[in-house]
Amino acid sequence: MDYGALCLMPPLVVVVLAIFIRRAFEPLLIGCLLGFVLIKPQAFPGNFIDALLSTLRDETMAWIILVCGLYGSLIHLIIQSGGVYAFGQYVLRYVKTRRSALVVSWGLGLFIFVDDYMSALASGVTMRKITDNYRISREMLALQVNAMAAPLCVLVPMTTWSIYVSKLLEDNKVVAAGEGFQGFLNLIPYLFYSWIIVIIALLLALGKFPLLGKLKKAEQRAQETGVLAPPKSKMGKSDENDIQGRAAKPQHFFLPLLVLIAATLILDKDALKGVMLGVAFTFFYYWWNGVMTFEALTDGIFEGFQSMVFALAILTMSYVLKRVGDEMGLTPFVIDAVSGVLSKGMLPLVIFLVLAFISYTTASSWGVYAVAIPIVVPLAQALDANVWATLAAVISAGAFGSHASFYSDVTILTATSTECNNMELSFAALPYSLIALGFSAFLFFAFS
Figure (cartoon, rainbow, N blue to C red):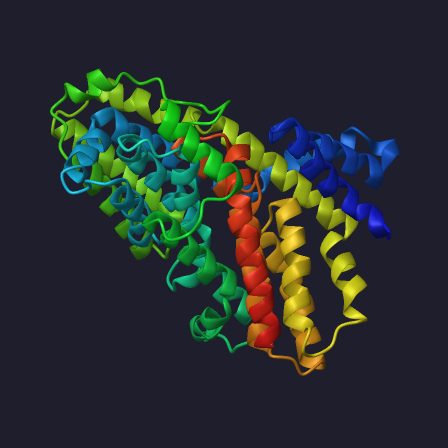
């Protein structure tokens, strides 16, 4: 069935409601319900329930639940061991200014580059106590962490993003089998959004870029009142004195992370295999060295997994919303609507803006890639356009959605790790995302 412009309604309802009520889960739920009413009203609510169950049974969703939950377990164990506190105290010997605290927050993303989930969770947890010492708002910290998650993973070879994109290039015959990595290298110079947002984040850390909008207000609030987190943020309740009293050492922090990163790289860049090995190592390392008791470690794994439930609920609903868009033909409809008026010189620019809108409103990045690339590649070839610039426009659009959307997976995980309200994070970072979007659009036009 051709739903036409009706396919735009569910994601637009989600965005508008979220702006007004400043929450993420409820607008997503309402948008999904509306979508399934539009798809087949006589089958509602059965079709919504079927989609929800199908999403939860989906192999990708199960992978995400396990990865996020186990990341939560690992981080919880590191915090409870006192490792984060000890590492923070060690770093504070060298971090003497607000600027250096922010630069270290930015630079940590360069170290934890393998996977955007890993970067968003580990960087936020690691740096929040350090930045708190300088009255840096949680919005500013979250902006730094978020900018160095998906945008950086898009730029660096040998990440989960680059592996996925390389496979898509091979599957769609853009390059020969086995040449996906070389194809990804061809994209890197054209990934304008990621380059720009990473540079903006560094300039903000150095104090060389102006504070705008809600971020400016957040920094004023933190400096003048000492209130670091925005309203409705889920601040941690752990007793810091308890943690300080333990024989915590910096290696209790960085050894589990090193094992996590190394295991992910070695085991086919599979984040699930990496985090499983990371949790197992951390469990036995802490137990063997008497850092935590066997019972405390077992309880900590479940408590950490449980701490990710709300984030996973939002992610689940965002995947259901993606199903709505797929069933209603959202991506093909929008691309078809503009393809008739496209020219060779305008193709990368228009593809970037159209897919950025779709990725932002659906919080989908990899899903957009899977749907859009088979459509975009023959279109670029037919128009004799720059195929690499056009493909980079697709990848950049997904990076924008992952980075800027208030209910994208990485935004939610960043908000969780930095204990910052995800809506406030998104609105504080939005001016910078739009600046990067505007400059990227100009460059896609200039280099088409």
